Amino acid sequence: MLKPFYLLLVCFIITADAQESLRKYADSLGLNIGVAIRESYITGTGSSATTHNNIVKTEFNTVVCENAMKSQNLAYSKTTYNFSTADNVVDFAIANKMKIRGHTLVWYRQNAQWLISGDREMLLANMKYHIEKVMGHYRGKIYQWDVVNEPFDEAGSGKFRTDNNPWQTVIGEDYIDSAFVYAHAADPGCKLYINEFGTTFPGPKSEALYDKVKEMLDNGIPVHGVGFQCHEGAVEDTVAAGLYAGIKYNFNRFAELGLDLAVTELDIQSSDPKAQADNYRVYLQVALSFPQCRTFVIWGVSDKDSWRSSGTPLIYDGNFKPKPAYDALLAVLKDPTPVVLVDRRARRLTKAGYLVYDRANNTVRVNDPSSNGPAIMEMFDLRGARIAKVTLRANNPLPLSSMKTAPGTALIRVKDEVVRIARDK
Ligand code: XIL
Image (cartoon, rainbow, N blue to C red; front, side, top):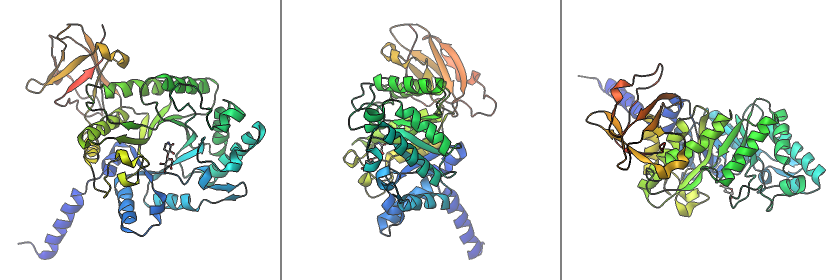
């Protein structure tokens, strides 16, 4: 018979062990799983503040200030910077052993008026001053900064943004290069990001971003990473939409330039919790498939505080209750099953066939009644390394048992599902 003390101890150990969190599994995968902080909660005393702060430190290992590091909220005048709100978040993060992303130094919105007033020489001088001041204040504490935010046109044309953007209209396109040069000098150890929305998938805006970062690299401008904001809406059927392949194809081009990637502001609008969960799952699976993508940030905790709250885009509801999207992320982190992707040419999705996993025989085969044409299948492990590349034919199932674990990787498994694929003609 166990004495009460030991019984208590056993109960405690069981409960402690049962404590699951996104953070726990992300830590073990080396993933910076982050969240944008509603700053007022950090020093708040109400029950929402307490719940918010508990979720942040339990579930995430990385934070971003939703607004406090924007120049409007820091740089009241050139001589009166006030870091106190942002410092509270930074102190909270350090106390809870979390990483801090910096957001953002040069943007067309939420600016201190003095910063964007003047001629070209003045704006360049102000920009340099501001970057040195802010990055200097946080030197060594912030592991990556969004140096330039949203430089491209809202409509997605691929042109540089001129609307309301004095950086572009007064200085010209080279403001972007200058910002990165100043930022690198201000904190040489920090990873410097260009951050954009509407660039999750291939398209004119994404092409323009690609061309710009390629040009920067060719010219020796110190850009280290591309941030994909990923403010999206849920697609109904992620398989039919080729969601995984589309994002993977697009991210991959940037990775091949030698840049790091980050999902920086993810939120996915939907009124259907199941579809939303499935979309969150896919974004995380894509991120995990890239060794270059070690940062995955969700733009807020609770739907009620979201900047797009009417679209209920976050993983906690208005009462801070985890939604199916939370469960989906947890499931991926616990069991990061490699995702199957066939051929990188996701643009050919109209020519797609389907890949079917046959659980009984542990085989995969192409299911495409219109053709026996071969498909090149690539399998990636959870860190993005390619484990296998094989040619599949419709009438020729591939036994998965023939695929051995690569050294240091998990065994390949394919979930019982149909994955949309791109296929050679
Ligand atoms: C948003 C904040 O969430 C809002 O609270 C604020 O009113 C406006 O800015 N892209 C960005 C973020 O880079 O800084 C924006 O954050 C959302 C879109």
